Length: 142
Image 1: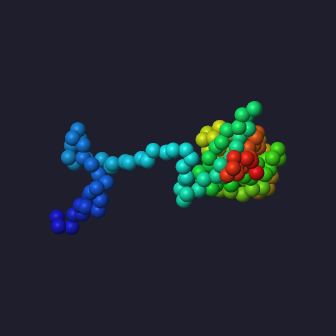
Image 2: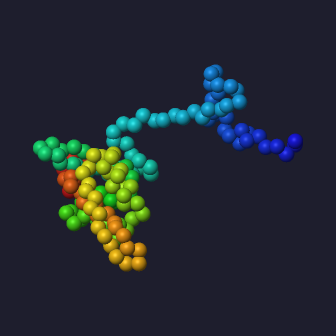
Image 3: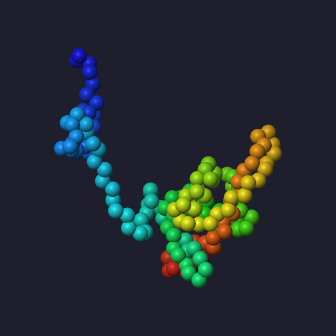
């Protein structure tokens, strides 16, 4: 048929390599991953540094997304009262908290609280239990 489209004609040939172990009909994308060195900047060149106090030692963490940094700044400012998605609206509070815990080892407590209204149920209150300060360029906290 003259109307058949060759889907591979739209793909840039330099991005695909054909391996000797694979049949010629299968194209494998070549994935080149840069080696990360600390500290690297995230998407859009964003990087914010914090100091986490753990007993007598202080370790430095580098937050690479603006939303995670915003959430961490809100948790620091809220102190022992903590933050809720109702008081501090954000699209994915639970995801920000999960990433801060997993990627940076922060201790953040989740307290389930009931709420009323037409859509009553529960929501989480997130309380930062780690001692965290935003770092300045000279190494001290702000």
